[in-house]
Every structure is written in C-alpha cells, then in structure tokens.
Image 1 (cartoon, rainbow, N blue to C red):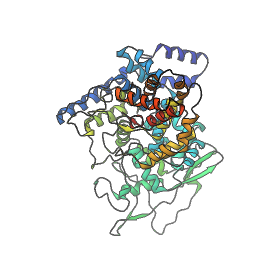
Image 2: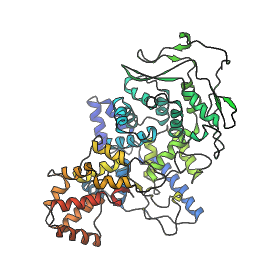
Image 3: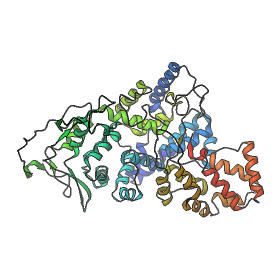
Length: 541
C-alpha cells in the first residue's frame, strides 16, 4: 500500500474485519500512487516542453493554489469547493497539498458520479429527460458508475457494451448502449465510430470520404453490417439484444450508381470472412445455427455472430481504441484534445503533439487500460497546472502553453450553484436535469455564449426558486444576514463563489450596492445571482 494514507489503510482493515469485501475492492482500485504516475507526468511535461521550444514560445507560469483547487474540484468531482475545503487544503504542507488533494478527490464517490456524467454524454449523447430516466431505469447508469468505481479496464468495458451479453445480473445495464438506438443500425455505426474509435464516418455513407482518404464507403457499411442482425427484445429480465444467424446481406451504391456488397470490414482491420449466399439462395433460420444464451432468460447466440466477430476481430487489438480514449480524457481535462476536435482523429486533423499521443496510448495499454491512472497522471503534470492567463504573443491553443478556459457543463453548473448557496448538492435533482437541457454542450469546438442560456439564467423560475428556497439557517444568504457589515458580507460572497477575495474595485462596487439597498435579503440575493451567472463562475479556468 505504498502511497496510501494511514487513514485509508485503517479503513481497509476495518472493512476486511466486518466483511465489506466490495468496499475493499473499491478502495484498492483507487491505489494509484504518485510514483506510479511519475512516468506519465514526466512524459507529458517533456513532450509539451519540446513543443514550446519548436514554436519558440514561453508558457504561462504554474497557477496559484486557489485557482488549482477550484480547477481540480470541477474536473474531478464536478463542482466548486466550499470555503472550508479550500481552507483545509491551504493548511497542508505546500509540497504535499496538491498530490494529496488529487488522491483524495479521486477516492471520492463524487468523482465516480461526475465521471459517469461525462462518459454518459460521450458514449450516449445528450437526450431529453425521458431518455435519462430510461438510462437509470434500465440500469445503464448503475452499470456505468460501477465500472468506473471498480476502475474496470477500458478495453473490457468497451467489449461488454458492444457484445451486449452480460453474464451477471449486475451487468445487465451494458445492453443499453445498443438498445437505446432502437435497431437503427446506421445510428449504431455512427455512434460506435466516434465513441470507440474517435472518428466520424457518416460522411462516407454515399461515397468514400471526400477529405479523409482512409475512410471508405465500405467501412461505413461494413460497420453497419456488424450490427444489422441485432434485434431489441424487452423481456422480464430487461432489455436484451438478440441476434440472428442469417440475413443482413445487402449492397450499397456510390454516387455513380455502382453497387458493392457490404462485407464485414472496418478501418485498419482485416475483413472478416463470411460465406455469402447467392442471390437466389434462401437460408433457413435453423436451431443448429445457434448455441444457448449466457443465461436461461437471455437470447440464444449465433454460432457465427457478427457482433462477436467485431469485438474479437476488430475492436480487441485495434490501436484506435486506446488512442481515442487517451485523447478524450486529455480533452476533458485540458480543454481540447491532442487531436482537435477529439472525435475526428483522422488525417485531416493531425495531432498537435503526435509523440505524446502515441506515448500515452502505449502506456495506457501497457498498464491495463487504467483510466484512473491516466487521469491522475494528467492532473499531476505541470502542463495541467499552468495558469489560465494566456502569455503575451502566444496565440495557438494547441500549444497548451496556458490552461484553456472552458464552460461548465450543465451538471457542473447545477451542482456548483447548489454547493455555493447551500453547502451541499444532489446529482439526481430536477435542477440538474433543467441545467443539463439548457447547457448541453460537452467539449464544444468553439466556446460561445448562447442566448437561450442567458434567458434561462435570467428568467427561469427554477433558477429563481433555487435562490429563494436556499433559506435554511446553514445556507449562504441567511448566514450573510447575520454578518455584521457589508464589507465582510462581500468577502464571504467572493470566497464562496470564486474562492478568492474581492479586488478593491469589486469590493467598493458591491458594498455600495448593498448599502443603497440597506443590506436586505433581496439585495444579497441579487448579488449572489449576479455572481452565479458571471463568466468567472460559469467557466473552469
């Protein structure tokens, strides 16, 4: 247990004594020490530093502690820190405080919930609240969170959601990745390509990709063919994906009208051989073509399963699976991918640091596709911890010469608003759903404010209700009423909302406003609202 805190050692022993084996396993999954990620940290900083030298630029300096705490809380647990959490951090020895906080936040269940929010969006896409409820009802969300909590190797997780044949009831949510697409095989293909391989193939539906030479029309329809024998079945045991042993043979036409048989093939992998019937041949769906399902209540399995061949013959050893995951996690933590956009990893979008991307992907595979280890390595690097003020004369964000500001997701913003006003937050609240619908972007290509977002923050009753209903004695606004003096009130507001003291001009302006309004509840509430809706609160920086 090298690098494991004495408290957590004692907690593991207590769990063992009282028989809480699942808890022990979860704790052990968090054992990613600073020494284990040292090669990641050194490689990131080395390759990025080489990029500075090649570009002839000087990066920003490392950011201050207060900015680092806010940034890390938002990135690892999806909310702003409380004043007490910030103060506790600053009490720790300066050399130990950052590694210790990284370790602590990675061990919180809040981290799992936040990471599940991110991966749910990356894998499933944004949806209306009805679909989010279905993802919970049909155990997708539980499956996703448990996989992250146990730090399941990424390659194993990918195979489970594509094969959709869970052998244990606890894994049945794995079926939902395919089931939600409702037998729309082209939608499945267009979802699998960016989610698993980091590329987009929809432009190759009618012809070879006109800009990306390596993506062919055959890859699009080959990917469709791997899934087009599947069929959704909703049974007592929940959503299942059955698969036929016959059918699914067709041809696709290009823009000139020439037809080509769709075969089981995909980018940078060998075609999967399958006997193809003649045009006049009709094949019967015989029992002898199947083997039993993995459990009594699950569909039978074709002896030649296209979906299984895709998993074992294409996905399992495909280098793009690791490259795409590494680039995606980098983008989540650094504001953009080493390849940007993160889901267009093709020859039209070369990586800004190709050696770094290849090194991270190889290291990821060597260490069992350990997502938590990768996250810890990135946030421990100097590159991640740079200040967000752009250095003079540096223009290219792909240099990663400063920390790239980015808007909070709807979930982050809702949780942070609750935490600032109430000192606590819940992820499953209606407020989170409301913010999720109004702030749907995750890693937008360009950060632009939307009119609908401004109208929501200004006029939506749910936002106003959050402010008005945060009226318990422990909540921020009632506490400020009991503070003697407007200057101290403003100090508490800035520390709570922004994690810093107000500048002299800010202090003067807000104090003047409160004094003209008599320091009333409404006046304090208006200031709190203006801070919650400000760019400083709404961006991670």
